[in-house]
Image (cartoon, rainbow, N blue to C red):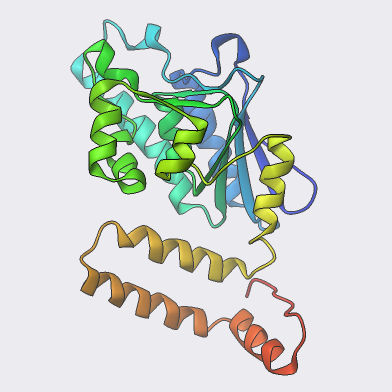
Amino acid sequence: MEKTDGSCALLKLNRPQALNALSFDVLHEIGDALDEVAGWRDIRALLITGAGDKAFCAGADIKELRNRSLIDQKRGADLGQAVFARLDRLPMASIALVNGYAFGGGAELAMACSFRLASPNALFGLPEIKLGLIPGYGGTQRLPRLVGEAKALEIIMTGLNVTADEAKRIGLVNAVVDGDLMQAGLEFAGRFTRYSLPALELARRAVQRAGDLPLCEGLQVEADLSTLAYRTADAEEGMAAFEEKRKPEFRDG
């Protein structure tokens, strides 16, 4: 984990010789890194990418998955899900910079992020069905929320690989970047990091709940969270700046 210039942090998966595969040790390291960045109050966005130009993350380390007890398999799935769920609880948004293969757990990591940018050579897939398995780190739950049930079933049940352009078309990624992916990630983050961090976090919370609740209950969540936003010092500053025709100076309060 490192801080970039400005208000972003960078988490890089660094196993290029294994296409940045997710061993259990790597999952624990990701979890520790997310716990660390959660305490960095000067950070307003987290960028996640993979070392090298071949793979964002090629998925789980298959060698570790064989000859394990059912209890150990369940613990492994619980670990992956728990680590990726921490992204939802971060005070800042996360952006996956998908530079190459994003298969299995790698695709699930990208889907757990708030946003996804892809290089033209990015390739997404949940190939577990080809091994007689199904996704276990959140793929069956997050993919339909992003692309709809029918398309998610097609990708999961056929083991379909999705190109970067197709991922953009179906809503799996926010943009395909033909150029410096890191710079594009910083520029994308810059579109929202100038705003109030409490307001950004409340907005994320409200949208995240939208996929879990009936509309009437979701609207109540929105009313509650928007009321909390009104109680912040940043809201007072934002409304005062609007009336005074100046740029607001948010202080995350």
